[in-house]
Image 1 (cartoon, one colour):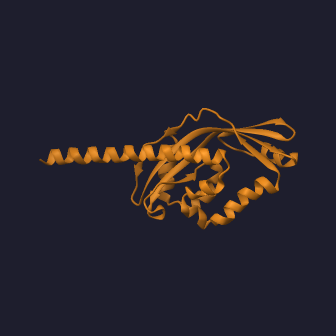
Image 2: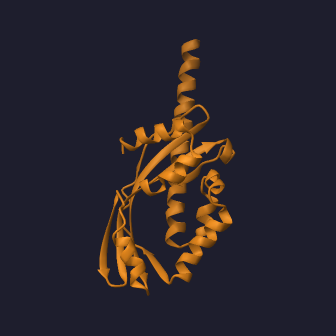
Image 3: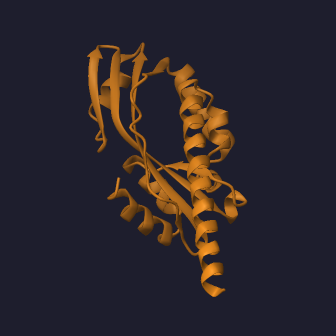
Length: 189
């Protein structure tokens, strides 16, 4: 009888993890769609809420929208194969996490070429920046998105960029347990 109960628990756990993987995959597609459509507030609604302790949500929304319109920057997300790779969901002491790696490519245009010139010299570990002309660049490469389910998310999945460029903010809002687990997960993608 114990073996039957144990088998049932294992089956139930693997079914839940499979459901979580499907939810994360669906949410991931939604985030990509919102991002390409520049629906900043919709993306922020799916963002891990602890990020807003570093930069308030309203300020982040205004900065993103203002940067694009106020600085005359136009972003176009190119359709590229996502090549989505996901780690299995990992249960930690106070949270569950899943890391995704995907390809993306965007073209940025600006009336002021000096804004783009600064970006061409920026160091981005998983991205390549190519200058298309004086006022246009392409940024393409791999990005990471971390799915987190914990008490801060009211036990629903929320998401956080996990690229090297976000390391400082992430270290302020994620526990050492999550940071350590994600670094191990990153090597498997």
